[in-house]
Length: 416
Length: 150
Image 1 (cartoon, rainbow over the protein chains, first blue to last red):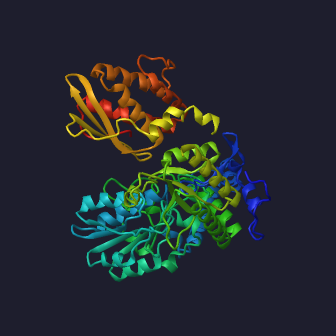
Image 2: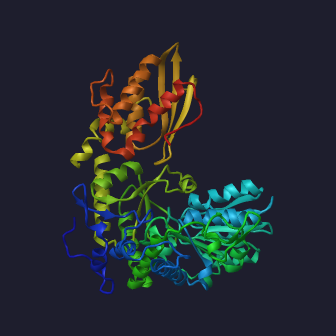
Image 3: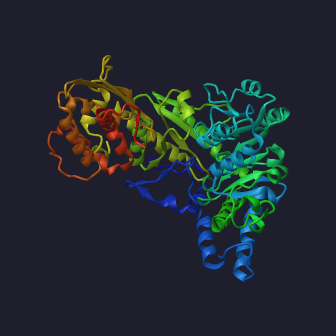
């Protein structure tokens, strides 16, 4: 491993940041952990870990209807987290922020609630060829249920959406456009402003899958984007698992039927008739993931404390450096070379299967993901069974990228 | 190379990965079955030609990691010429070894296959080692639809 002084950009407090993440301090197979599987999930700062523990230790009770002190404190913190999310997305109103389990649940909610109600036989749902399964399967399911057709906009060899072809697929029957803001398999960041404008011109609503974009291309401004729905997950954003967000424009959410029934989402229940609750509670049946929502609020605070522009600049420079080093290695093919991409470096090696790459890298302490990344159509398009994927986050360093490439060179020697 | 990995990636594994044996199509196979490991993208097609209840010829094609390729290659070597009953016993023995249910590496007839015993230390790779075997099992039971390790 490189023993020279770590590469430091004066404005970015990388040493302090790394010290904030306890999980990064460990060794794996006797080597310092180099955690590069951030697209799958991110490690948590002490702020988030401590917030969860401290919340359970002092402020925990069930929310919303208790008259006792703890219930009031828990409610204030839970709703406070909702407002933090509102601010993070620059949504106009807290009623437009629905807490769900994650991006997958958010998309399923829209497909089943908005989709079932608004899609008729012959209508069209348009997605792209670079989507994660969670932005494919819910649409396949609702199309089967309603008789609507699923159409797929193609990508090019760089892993970019072909915007002309996308536009050609929009028509009078297009009701829903669901697109990833940033691809988990390729790193491609899509031209979402243009996509939304085109979709709206054809009378379609737009859902953006923001699972990767929320942590890696902040800030996300849902008002400026004018997207109809936006979904992201807490655990990729340095927050807890089990919590995610669906943003939806108020008029749309008002008109949508509830997704799950039960307590909290009702205003009044009799056996003859039940009245549903106001937004956002109409979509939050049952006791919520209270502590997790509060933890997500802390994760947002943490990102804010570093600064979104600083995070993006740091990750962009890392990706640029890693890509440069990757391209020096004979037999290494980078999969996903979009002009605008972030964080993700997916690659294959000529003589070594991604699964073997992953196992070997693990023995060098380097954690990457090997497989289809829940994006089998992307693998099929690039005609590979799988890729190895390194993905960079706000706490990764140039030295870690060096360790990744040192290990890759050793692997090539062994398999040679 | 890192010593711990040597338990799994032995010379035999590298050899069979680089030069897989019986890596071809059998045009007039009695059984053709596809195996797929969705977790990592290993894919193989197994071809079996029977002579009564003996496996007269067996081959495979496909794309996969070193473990799945080596396992398939070693399997075709050891199973060729065996009866269906013998192949079944070898499947059981191999499965016990790789899942850590048995430590007896001298289990009847396993020979070079014992090198894959190391995979038990790598739980995420066990399905790579057993893909070809599950496919064989499936083919011999007459289940012609594709086999998945999920």
